[in-house]
Every structure is written in structure tokens, then in C-alpha cells.
Amino acid sequence: MDEDGFWELIDLCARETGSRKERLAWLKTQLCQLSADEIIDYHMWWELNANRGCTCDMYALSCHLLRRESTDGFEYFVYWLMSLGREAYDQVADCPDRVMELPQVMDLLDLKRRWFAERRRGLPWSDEEYPGFELLAYVALDAYEQVTGAEVDVLYTAVKARGVRSRFPLLAAEFGEQDWDIADDAEIARRLPRLARHLTSRG
Image (cartoon, rainbow, N blue to C red):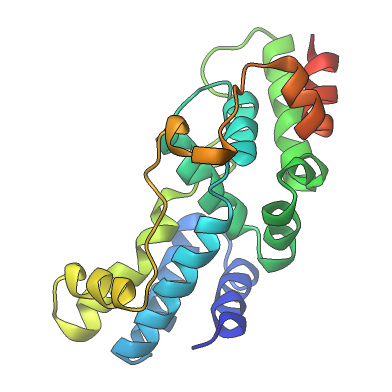
């Protein structure tokens, strides 16, 4: 499986299903029809593309949009962005600030504004709407176990043997040369002007 084949599955599972539960089931069914090597290919492309979103700029977006500084939340936010499909993800992986252009993000921010305006409690999003999709990352693992009967460590080892390692989980301080203070308003305005405008308008 090449990268085009990987994204075709991600895009198709969004179009062919309704709920997240249905999406996970559909994708697992498709993967279980593949060979073990093809499932390894799929997971390799998953890791490579997820790594593209593992940047300090994307981390800052996640923290400010979700109003919570969490490395787990950041990881699942990137997975949710991947679930939106190749076109959307290519747009934001290359320029994280363009997350603010996605209609799905605009819809969520509108929900959040109305929620807090009405002083309601809890989260402004349902489980289906929440901008995090942890379980999407595990579908290939479940399929690999079912197809081969082997432990998922075998899959991880095979992906690592191809020179691919996940950058998650990752602490903000581990971004190395990319690292910057995500609470610095001036840096946010310079690096993420669309996010900065949203934060300013929010007051």
C-alpha cells in the first residue's frame, strides 16, 4: 500500500459511514481484507502523516482551541485532523494556522461560543463532534492482531524496521529547535495570525 492507498481508505471511511463507531468498524473490515504487510504499510503511513502534525505550532493551536494544555489531547487532536481527510490535513500540516480556515473547526468554535454565552455546564461538543479521535489510531493494530494472530508489538517492530518512529507522545519541552513559549502573545501573533485574531476577538 502506498500513501495514496492509505488516504483513499481514510477518505472513503468518512464518506461511507455515519457515526465514529461505524467508521471504525468499516475501516477495520477493510484492513482485515489486506495482507499483514499491507496492514504494516497502512500503519507506517499513519505514523508518518501523524508526525507531520507533531509541531510546536500545532501544539499551540490545540492548547488554545481546546483551552487545555494536554499532550494527550494534542495527539488526539492531530488524529482528528487526519480523520477530516487528505485535502484538509495536507492544508493544515503544512501550515497549522490554516486550521482556523477549516469549516469543521469554525462549526466547533461557533458551538463553543453559544455554549458559553448560555452559561451551560460541561463540554460544548458531543462525543461525535469532539475534536479528538484517539481510537482511529488503533484500527490497524486490531486488524493486524485479527489477521495474523500476532501481538501488536510485531507490527510496531516492523514499522520501526522501516525507519519510522512515532513522535507521540511528546512533551512540549521536547520539540527541540521548534520550541517556543505558547503563552507568548507576540509569538502567537507572528506564527499563528489567524489563531491570534480568534483569541483577540474572543476577548
